[in-house]
Length: 453
Image (cartoon, rainbow, N blue to C red; front, side, top):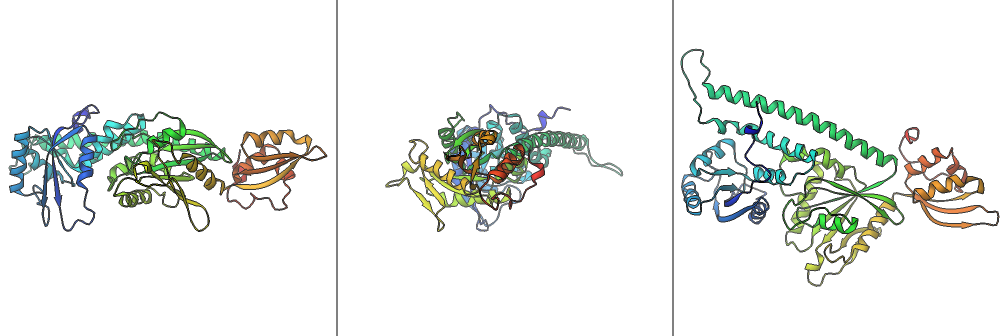
């Protein structure tokens, strides 16, 4: 059985077209969705908001969410504007969605389905497409019944359990379960490969800096500026979906991997977080997070809280974070400065990815924070240990070099503890022998020295 007909009709090339928006304000709703954000989401999905309905209710109507009177108003607007889609800024139950589609005779979507559609349009890599398909299938499982309302629902005498429609639904549900199981197996394979790459970077002591932030904060534009990359960037929500990694050489740190990730949003659907968990683990495993904030957005503080909430869900709340206020050129009297905490470490930096102002400060701050985890010490290398010198330069660990009268090389070094252990092992203990400190600076670190290659 083909799974294609069980999926929602949201191929990558399909756009929403003329769309009617419905925004319901509920007094019991603590975290009310934002109407302006819904409009941006519809635009990102290729839709045009032709009319917007705003209504207030004490509680959602069980059958239609908005009540019979408002259903008639929206249906009239759909006919008058020839809209192709109606989008609700709330989560609809399968029954509500089914009833509304009958009343409007057009496609009805809630906010979660809209976000899933955008993700389907943006996915480019094999892993990204698998993740989106998994989230869509999990979302669609409870909505299968709407596709078979035209089939018979017989009820009769003793022993009868239903008509052919019920049988078809069970077949479809089984097909969905089988497809979900296949996708999860494929994603596990991809996740293992990703973990292998992370382990390789850890063994080679390569720092990872992950870009996070609210969608459309300018992460990809900033990423392109710093890495000389060509990641797609546009003024729309979820312009980029698939994670991108690039290598950058930072002074005093050496080779560093910058990772651009998907933008976050308020109340990101749980199915999406679960489906993208292996991708988001890049964030949780990073050495530093660059939390990119749109400095010109009046809701920036709320956006920061929304991102922090998602970071907690993916286990990245404890990772060191530097807040980067991007688009500072759009703020009047903005200063491209660095704000530090009581210990002198940078906590906020103001930049403009578009003009390039403040980017040098940003790179300096990244280097400074990453260097805080480095072991700094001095070695005296005799002429016979030239191999050790080559290893240290290859690791970008040398800050300065000088010679004494005996021809010995004095090197001031800064590098991670695991890199110290690796070089010491590769040079048969030469790093330990030449270190002038009585207590080796990397011995107290907690990792298995025997596993260091």
